[in-house]
Length: 183
Image 1 (cartoon, rainbow, N blue to C red):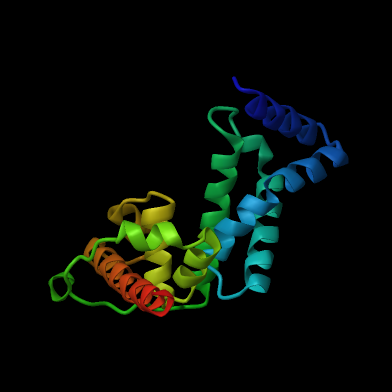
Image 2 (image 1 turned 180 degrees about the horizontal axis):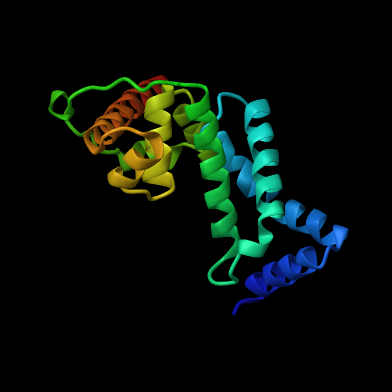
């Protein structure tokens, strides 16, 4: 077990014993990464902060269900993603449903991506329409399959694939425009 995992586990155990300082330390340790996760799905910073706070409350209320198998951060990340998705579904943000074969898959141009800062790329992804952004984040960033995405969002696998294709196409177009301006 590495040092970071050991620290995480010790903090979780201290939280389970009711030590308030451990809750704060755990929050401080993971808040920046969890804010990034929630920001991928939220419309703005304030919405992401609300979702992150709610996710931490859920995590702290359910710490007893953490099995000390694998990373605590992975367990917490899953809570943040599910909290964000719950809010997206609650707001009834409907994704545009289209046929997959209307679109061609577009790849990424590594040259373009290597010249942009991570923050710029995140900003570009956040400018995508809600459906595209959600599926892109779940698939590309979080690693969910189209079947899993479909189950989480209540859409078909083909709709998930279509949304990803559209997201990639939109990203490619935005990145090409940026490169032309920079050129």
